[in-house]
Image (cartoon, rainbow, N blue to C red; front, side, top):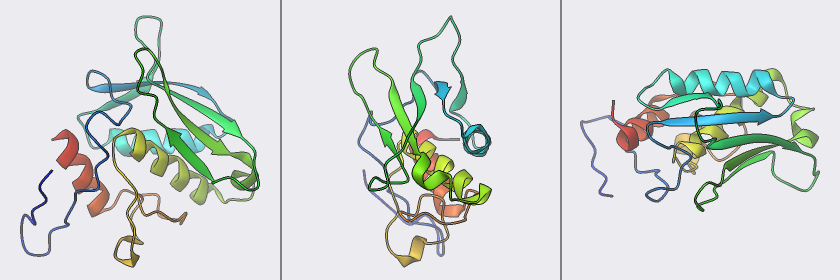
Length: 160
C-alpha cells in the first residue's frame, strides 16, 4: 500500500493489517458473544458501524459466524486482544481480560472493546505520541469516540 497525504493537515493513514487480515466477510462481520462486557462490545460496535460500509451485526442461523467475543483472566496478559484465524470456517476472536476490565472505568472498557474491534476491521495499532488521542493508539486510554486518524484508516481500507 502506498501512503499519500491527501491535503495539507490531513491525517496520514496506512495503519493497515495485511490484505485479508480482518474479520470481514462479504461486507459484514457476524459476531457471537460470550462476554460479560456487553456494554463495551455494544459501544464499539455502534462506533464502527457509524462509518459504513462494513456492517457489524449479530450472527444468526442463516450466516456464518466471523467473530466471537470471549473473556479470560490473566494478570500477566494484555488487557485484551484480537486473534485472527485464517482457516476456512474458523472464527476470529476478541478476548477481553477480566483481570483488567474489572478495574477499568466504563470509559476505559469501551475504549478497549472499540480498539479491538478496530483490529477485526483490519486496522493496526498506532504508535508514537502523535496518535495518543486516537482509539487505535497502542496504549489503553479513555478515548472512546473515533478520531480523524481512526476514521481515515477505516475509509482507506473499506471506502465510504
